[in-house]
Length: 139
Image (cartoon, rainbow, N blue to C red; front, side):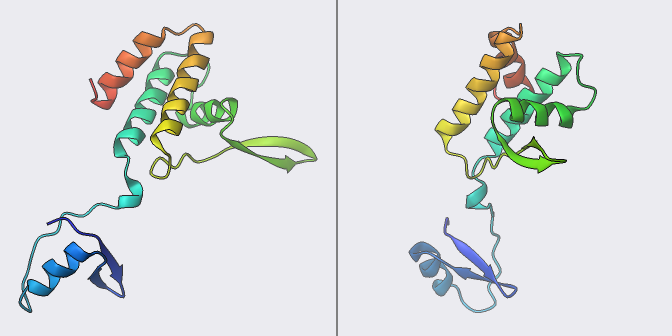
């Protein structure tokens, strides 16, 4: 039974009609198994794919020695950053990418922009995609 539930004060409460019907048909003290997932975090696949792409890029370059620094640099170059005044100079700081809130078209644009940038820097787009899909388990 699929239904939307909400945790409040240590208890689960049904939030949609299907969940309410299911819940109220159960006798008291009934135990049941619930397979839960957070609907606001809808995109584990996007998350896996993006980080597989970052890992693929990291493995195929020699400039960065720290993958997190490379990821942040990539996001800044792609414009996923906020600007702060540090020491009187505007300084970019990479934003955290919220895949669960990111629409599919925005995610596709992020991947495409990443591949465009890497292609301009001499990487083979098709090869990067193939390696990333294999690493992400999407092949």
